[in-house]
Length: 314
Image: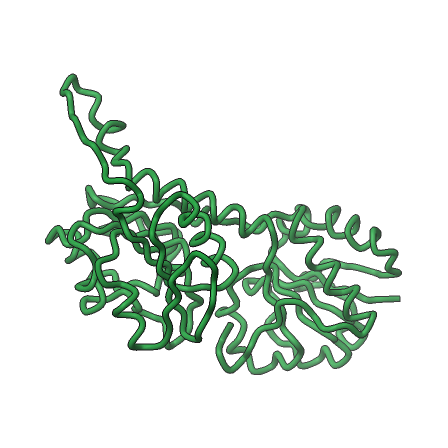
């Protein structure tokens, strides 16, 4: 019998138990699955798989000597890759729900800013404001990060007519997107960008990717969208660019501290929109199928999906 330890905050167990059991049952797997608490868990030496959220109380993996893989419920793994007790294979979450949710958030806010919708939504005061936006083909978009989420968002925007450039640390080839990579490619990717979308993983190398120097490459009055990770942006530099008009508007979904403190300057800034880390939530119905498929693969001796490269950090 396969022994599965679910380790996340208590509310997640209530959300995930039924979808996970349904997905595991669909594969015909013989298993036992229990929720981890600080007072009770499966015997660590008996566990085959850990379904995991990095904010779980389970932080020491030393005793899990039989564990074949740790299966992350989140796309982000920066909260766990540095854990030296974790020696088992680690898989991050890549699933349809995460990807589709991110595409909808990015496309929705990109179009809102591109069309200048805030001017009309916030200006119902009897003044006839005639604002005609450029066509999409005249507003270059840059996607920083060409993983599954960045590729999907860039492809969707390209299909709407935006010229899309994408930047990644290693070379990529995505149809419809001009792909650039490496330190030299970053400046080229940002040059003249009218919209910048940050979807990089968070590592030591990507922190503050958007800073005082790189912001200078954008088109005057550019828009910044960050649904990736808060520390990808130097907050002080972005606020200065907003105050100076170099950046016209920033829509931010992720922050260095969450929830964003009520006294943070972003809340009061007239050209900042804050959304509460909702750009793409892991949905139990679709994530459960990815987890179950990886467990099936592990039992069949097949390669796991979406394994994390520990050296790269994602």
